[in-house]
Length: 181
Image 1 (cartoon, rainbow, N blue to C red):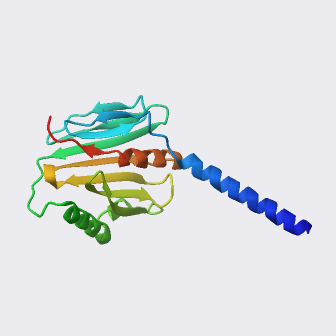
Image 2: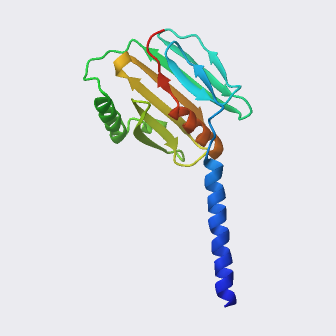
Image 3: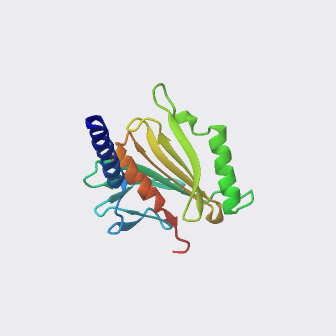
């Protein structure tokens, strides 16, 4: 009887801890601000983020610095890309999956540092998202090739803690391309 009660208490404790951990991973984005990375690429991030542009020749490079989180993300927005293949979401997603299957991201792997890549869609665009196998050791990266508008966007952060990686992945979900000026 005592053993059953002890088992029940341990089970209840494990379930409540599991729920607390899941709730900690939910990020409230309702008060985030929209930021422009160049004329067309937009994303949402916590208020107080700073976009610092660097000089680029055929692209718009820079940094996204998140206040209070000690996160520095580097980005590079490219434009004028050729469109020599079929351009549709399904063809772009298929190409992204091929790149992942081929292991195009594996150049990031070093001894003791390995990554996982997946092809996904974000706001109607195909993207490759790369995360480290071991949290805090490696890069968290996204690349979107927007063939419809002949442009691309890459953003990455290095050695992010679990909480910061979750935050950055949420930022990645908000990326969009706004046509026109």
